[in-house]
Image (tube, rainbow, N blue to C red; front, top):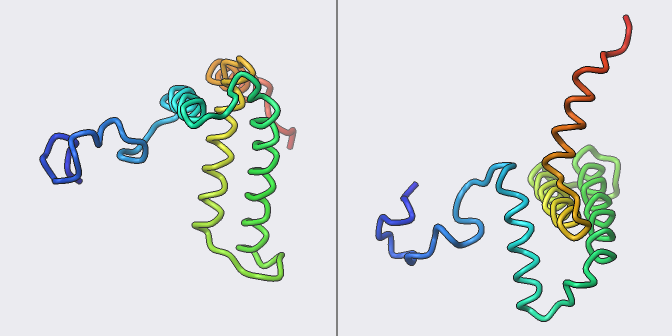
Amino acid sequence: MESASSGSGRGDNRRNRPGSRIYSLDDLPTIARDILARLAQAGFDVDNEQPRQIMCVAEEAGEFVGAWRRYYGWARRSGTKGDMASELADLIIVTFIAAEVTDIDVMAALESKLEKIYTRGWKDA
């Protein structure tokens, strides 16, 4: 893979273009803010974005379930694992956007929840 400054002919702004690199979980809060800024630039009313983003979480969860059903043969038509992965990625992204518009520190919430999960014990044998 060529670096952003390799002169590959793809432009000098690859580093700042979404999708130009692999992102980590730590990048998602910043990405959510960037997406919201782009929505505002496109004319969306981001001051009243909560209902739309909360509904997007539900919508994307449903789309992921639908993709899962198609992949595992529980639907009338078939689907691919790539479809499932794409829908799951959508769900993760809109979840971070929903956290941003509801002023939830999702990274802190994840850390707290994982601490609880790993310290509460597992099912007794």
